[in-house]
Length: 219
Image (cartoon, rainbow, N blue to C red; front, side, top):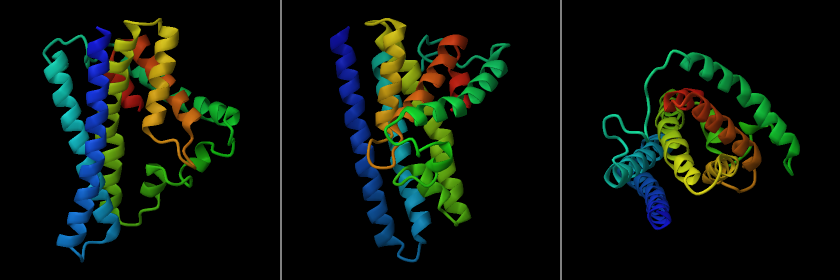
């Protein structure tokens, strides 16, 4: 029902905010307990702590409320169909042109894919500026492994399916993509429209293949 959907969205939002507080708290604790720890490593560990907290809380909520991760769940489909590689390759190939096209239409067209790494304060900029190997490895894992899994589960497996129960796919996919982009921030240097375009690509690979594993690998 719409009331249940509203509750789940509010509960997920609250847990996301709490995970941000956990990240800040972890940063303060690391700074106080290990003053000799290099700043990039402390930042990477605090970011990982916050993200793992977000993953854990969101997975617990979806599991409790929807049986999301139950065997043969319709919400999370990770079976490796025969065509999964074709969908992954097509999705990955579509990401760059979609991002660049959306960048050219955005109010700040200079924020193309080549400029994304230098556009502060994105997590991409912070990761690529790290010259500490361990900090870089932790950050890449946070952004590309746990981040890809949970974001695809949330925005494609849960939110897109939920929205499709109340609106046509032509509206549900852009709405899910917009929320995906807003989740990554709307401040200076945050290419919101290009990120929404990536969200649409990820949604298209999921809808076309019916396989969340495809969207996770594309992400």
